Amino acid sequence: MNADYYDEVLNIKTGGNQRGFSSSFHYHRYEPTPYSALETLFAQYELKNSDQVVDFGCGKGRLNFYINHLFQSTVIGVEMNETYYQESVDNQTSYLKKFKNNKDKIHFHCSLAEKYEISPEDNRFYFFNPFTVPIFWKVINNILLSVEKSPREIDLVLYYPSEDYIYFLENNTSFELYKEVILPGFYEHNPNERFLIYRMV
Image (cartoon, rainbow, N blue to C red; front, side, top):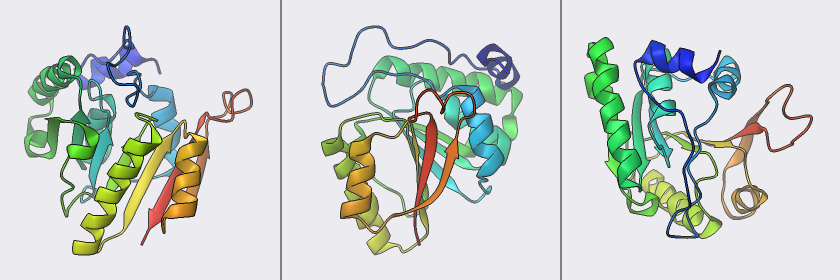
């Protein structure tokens, strides 16, 4: 299915990529995860309505609305770009006109990822290679500190995972690779076209 189809079903607008670049080299340009990739991921990796998913670098909120619609999970988008944050809030208004019962399960924050305060209920975290390793390290450290205070199972979902992210997780944390989901037709030409899910129990 193409993006226009899902955007219409969800009553949102999430197409397009970022024009230009972020003012900080630590933060990468916005690009939404393709709906076709999300279909493949969630055919093999299920969420529960009790899960609370944080999307770092959420852009216009595509992942958030898709997950909420599919699993009724609580979703939180963290976006540093004020323009994209506002577009995600506008999309939230449109989405809730069609799916009124989900009002309390969708939240957006205009914030740097490392400044987002991890909630004890946050247990699934999504990264589409949104920033450099120093920022990733700070975010993971925030997650680990939260888990120390409130022990729980944590999943990190990485799309198009960088070797630096993988190296850091496997050599500096207790996260272990739980599942790999490759994207047929794309992975054969580009080994980055996959999801890696790391879990800490």
